Amino acid sequence: MTPYKRKSYWNEPGLTLWERAYLPEILRGLAITSGVFLRNMGRWMTGRKGALTTYYPEETRADYAPRNRGKHVLTQRPDGKPQCIACNMCATVCPAKVIEIEAGYDPTDTAHPKFPVRFEIDYSRCVFCGLCVEACPEDAIRMAKEVPGLPAEDRHQMWLTMDEMLHWQPQSDVAKPYAAAGAARAPVAGKHPGSPT
Amino acid sequence: MTQDLLVYVVFIAYAVGMLMSFGTVLTWVERKQAAVMSDRIGANRAYIRIPFTKVKLIWLGLFHGIADGIKMLMKEDFKPRTYDALAYAVAPWVVFTPVLLVFAVVPFGGMLDPGRLFPALADWFGGRTYPMQIARLDAGLLVVFAFSGLTIIGTMLAGWSSDNKFSMLGGVRAGSQMISYELVMGLTVLGLILVFGTLDLDAIVRQQSGVVLGFLPAWGVVYQPFAAVLFLTAAIAENKRIPFDLPEAESELIAGYYTEYSAMKMGLFMFAEFIEIAIIGALFTTLFLGGYNLPYMNDAGFSWPDGSTWAMSHGAVVVTQLVVFLAKVMVVCSFQILIRWSLPRFRYDQVLAFSWKFLLPLALANLTVTALLVWAQKAGGQG
Picture (tube, each protein chain N blue to C red):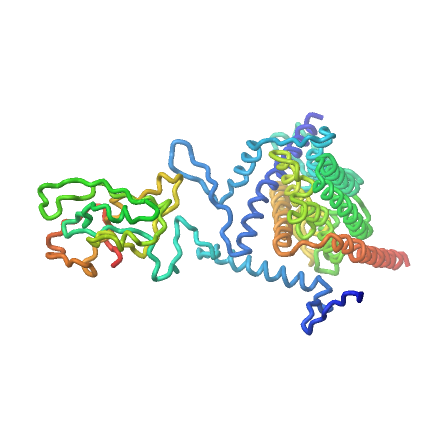
């Protein structure tokens, strides 16, 4: 049997004499790392950010994709009530079974007597598939381009309540245009003024 | 007699406190420096809440060292079913204690005159002066090598008594590597001893406050630049840190000789490693960087190369020397951390070849050249 002969390539990996002397290359490496260190330290010292890390719960990345849909919002009627009629279609279609709706009865509102008392989404299990948005007959639930504040001490704190989803008050881009937008709408306390449209 | 006791108790408390704080702070420095070097933020979540308030002290993650300590104290103290339980229990201390003892002979300040520092106590002290050093020994440098040689025994004990093949391989590697580099370290320092003509570390520092070639401070690194590089290389190898961390190479040996150690015993190994960084820093400072003195500085103040002098009060000199020593040690520690986070690990055969085929001949050459130069100078002085 002929002994195995190692194939040789035209770009055989190897070290030049300079690289094999080791010390100059070591010094070059140290210069690179200490250069990065000094540059970043200089940035920290002058009040800028010297790291690429996003300091997550406090900061969120600015470069989410424009198509990112990360947070559920409940659309509202001009009087600030949720457009939701508590029909439970979204909860039924939800593949992760994360939506919980408790319906209430309001005899004074003849047009929409059924309304959600409680509308909660468990974000620890939500898969962000958007099927709830598709299922909704009233355009009451949508997904916004935001990112939910997910970090929590335990999973029971990762439920998003109705109050947190009711901050979306667009004056345009709604399926059902508001009859008297602005005039009839009562300002609701604790809502975000600059909401995305 | 009581005065001596008091002064030395203060010195020992200062030295031990300094080493312990260096050990703790260096864990933070290592994390943060590595983070900044690689565009990260670094550990910064541990905090101390001021009781009964909502004020959280984060201080750039400085409390992570405390969190580590608490974690190590609370963890299960795992004991392998070893045939040599005594050696297993003793090994971390055999590593840890000599590291602390090395510092006994390192001077961290010049001559202290407590009577001048506290005039109220001048009568009681009666003009006694103390070099700021725990033990002033003529053979100080030999003591350093004697004690740092002891840590080899600890690592080999740990590797041998753990009853684990990885541990034993780590112990064997540690033994061969540390013995090889101990030799190089000793040979590099020999050149310095020839230049300074003494083994007493305090005398070496005092000689470095002079001037050489008219303007350069007479630091060891000026006399022996080559030896300084070799010494630092060998010292890092001696401390078994990257790029020489073969004994604990995690990709090959899990954690090497302390694989079977857990909780605070493992913490002692880690702590010893970090204190040894500080010790290397202190030794390098003392031998090559002028010790506790600024350039051109001595116990009386500054004497500049042009012959003029600045007198300083005794208190100012003492404080300056203590601070300068700490600052220099910190800089050398930081440089070691820079090396640790820049270089990849050697292969095992490369480590030993690097020591015996590269560093040792260089150290010998350095020694020969130094000896010839010193001899020529002596002969020239006589003739």
